[in-house]
Length: 137
Image 1 (cartoon, helix red, strand yellow):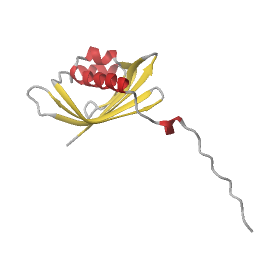
Image 2: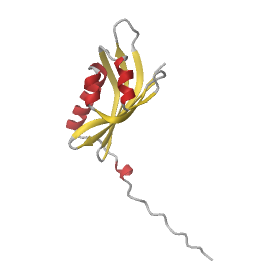
Image 3: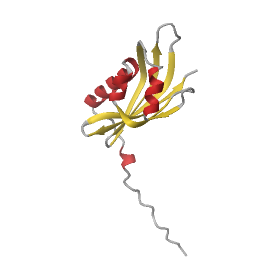
Image 4: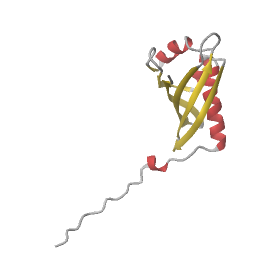
Protein backbone atom coordinates (compact mmCIF):
# COMPACT_ATOMS: atom_id res chain seq x y z
CA UNK A 1 0.00 0.00 0.00
CA UNK A 2 1.36 3.44 -0.95
CA UNK A 3 0.49 6.52 1.05
CA UNK A 4 0.15 9.81 -0.71
CA UNK A 5 1.92 12.69 1.00
CA UNK A 6 0.77 16.18 0.06
CA UNK A 7 3.51 18.29 -1.51
CA UNK A 8 4.50 21.48 0.19
CA UNK A 9 4.04 24.47 -2.02
CA UNK A 10 6.70 27.14 -2.09
CA UNK A 11 5.26 30.47 -1.10
CA UNK A 12 6.27 33.54 -3.03
CA UNK A 13 7.61 35.49 -0.08
CA UNK A 14 8.95 38.94 -0.87
CA UNK A 15 12.04 38.04 1.19
CA UNK A 16 12.91 35.41 -1.42
CA UNK A 17 13.09 38.11 -4.10
CA UNK A 18 16.18 39.86 -2.78
CA UNK A 19 18.27 41.69 -5.33
CA UNK A 20 20.67 44.59 -5.58
CA UNK A 21 19.83 48.29 -5.66
CA UNK A 22 20.41 50.13 -8.91
CA UNK A 23 23.87 51.66 -9.40
CA UNK A 24 22.33 55.13 -8.91
CA UNK A 25 20.67 54.13 -5.63
CA UNK A 26 23.86 52.44 -4.44
CA UNK A 27 25.83 55.62 -5.13
CA UNK A 28 23.28 57.71 -3.21
CA UNK A 29 23.14 55.32 -0.26
CA UNK A 30 26.90 54.83 0.09
CA UNK A 31 27.35 58.61 -0.02
CA UNK A 32 24.70 58.98 2.72
CA UNK A 33 26.45 56.32 4.78
CA UNK A 34 29.84 58.01 4.47
CA UNK A 35 28.34 61.37 5.45
CA UNK A 36 26.72 59.65 8.44
CA UNK A 37 30.24 59.08 9.73
CA UNK A 38 31.98 62.27 8.64
CA UNK A 39 29.32 65.00 8.81
CA UNK A 40 27.76 66.54 11.87
CA UNK A 41 24.82 65.06 13.76
CA UNK A 42 22.39 67.44 12.00
CA UNK A 43 23.18 65.77 8.67
CA UNK A 44 22.84 62.30 10.17
CA UNK A 45 19.53 63.27 11.78
CA UNK A 46 18.15 64.63 8.48
CA UNK A 47 18.75 61.26 6.79
CA UNK A 48 17.46 59.10 9.65
CA UNK A 49 13.87 58.12 10.47
CA UNK A 50 12.50 59.68 13.67
CA UNK A 51 12.14 56.41 15.58
CA UNK A 52 15.18 54.63 14.14
CA UNK A 53 17.21 52.17 16.19
CA UNK A 54 20.99 52.25 16.45
CA UNK A 55 23.23 49.76 18.19
CA UNK A 56 26.74 50.80 19.18
CA UNK A 57 29.37 48.97 21.25
CA UNK A 58 28.68 49.46 24.96
CA UNK A 59 28.44 52.23 26.01
CA UNK A 60 26.16 53.67 24.63
CA UNK A 61 24.54 50.39 23.51
CA UNK A 62 21.01 50.32 22.05
CA UNK A 63 19.52 53.73 21.28
CA UNK A 64 16.22 54.70 19.71
CA UNK A 65 14.68 57.97 18.55
CA UNK A 66 15.89 61.03 20.47
CA UNK A 67 18.37 58.95 22.49
CA UNK A 68 20.47 58.57 19.33
CA UNK A 69 21.15 62.26 18.98
CA UNK A 70 22.18 62.76 22.60
CA UNK A 71 24.73 59.94 22.24
CA UNK A 72 25.82 60.86 18.72
CA UNK A 73 26.79 64.42 19.66
CA UNK A 74 29.51 62.96 21.84
CA UNK A 75 30.69 60.62 19.08
CA UNK A 76 30.89 62.92 16.04
CA UNK A 77 34.05 64.25 14.50
CA UNK A 78 35.30 61.32 12.41
CA UNK A 79 37.91 62.81 10.10
CA UNK A 80 37.56 59.99 7.60
CA UNK A 81 36.06 56.55 7.15
CA UNK A 82 37.06 53.73 4.81
CA UNK A 83 34.27 51.26 4.08
CA UNK A 84 35.57 47.96 2.70
CA UNK A 85 33.81 44.71 1.88
CA UNK A 86 30.76 46.71 0.85
CA UNK A 87 27.56 44.78 0.23
CA UNK A 88 24.13 46.07 -0.67
CA UNK A 89 20.93 44.07 -0.86
CA UNK A 90 17.41 45.23 -1.68
CA UNK A 91 13.96 43.83 -1.09
CA UNK A 92 11.20 46.12 -2.27
CA UNK A 93 11.69 49.57 -0.74
CA UNK A 94 14.27 48.36 1.80
CA UNK A 95 18.05 48.33 1.28
CA UNK A 96 20.61 46.93 3.71
CA UNK A 97 24.22 48.10 3.47
CA UNK A 98 26.95 46.12 5.24
CA UNK A 99 30.66 46.84 5.41
CA UNK A 100 33.85 46.96 7.48
CA UNK A 101 34.49 50.52 8.71
CA UNK A 102 37.90 51.92 9.57
CA UNK A 103 37.34 55.42 10.94
CA UNK A 104 39.77 57.89 12.39
CA UNK A 105 39.60 60.85 14.75
CA UNK A 106 42.44 63.10 15.79
CA UNK A 107 44.52 61.70 18.68
CA UNK A 108 42.69 58.35 18.82
CA UNK A 109 43.50 54.87 17.47
CA UNK A 110 41.68 53.84 14.30
CA UNK A 111 38.18 52.60 15.12
CA UNK A 112 37.23 49.40 13.32
CA UNK A 113 33.75 47.91 13.23
CA UNK A 114 31.54 45.64 11.17
CA UNK A 115 28.48 47.72 10.31
CA UNK A 116 25.02 47.41 8.82
CA UNK A 117 22.50 50.12 8.02
CA UNK A 118 18.95 49.65 6.82
CA UNK A 119 17.33 52.26 4.58
CA UNK A 120 13.71 52.68 3.53
CA UNK A 121 12.72 54.42 0.33
CA UNK A 122 9.92 56.56 1.72
CA UNK A 123 8.05 58.89 -0.63
CA UNK A 124 10.93 58.90 -3.10
CA UNK A 125 13.70 59.61 -0.57
CA UNK A 126 15.93 57.30 1.45
CA UNK A 127 15.81 57.29 5.26
CA UNK A 128 18.01 55.23 7.59
CA UNK A 129 15.82 53.10 9.88
CA UNK A 130 18.61 51.26 11.68
CA UNK A 131 22.36 51.21 12.09
CA UNK A 132 24.49 48.68 13.95
CA UNK A 133 28.20 48.51 14.76
CA UNK A 134 30.14 45.51 16.04
CA UNK A 135 33.59 46.42 17.27
CA UNK A 136 36.45 44.57 15.58
CA UNK A 137 39.03 43.58 18.18
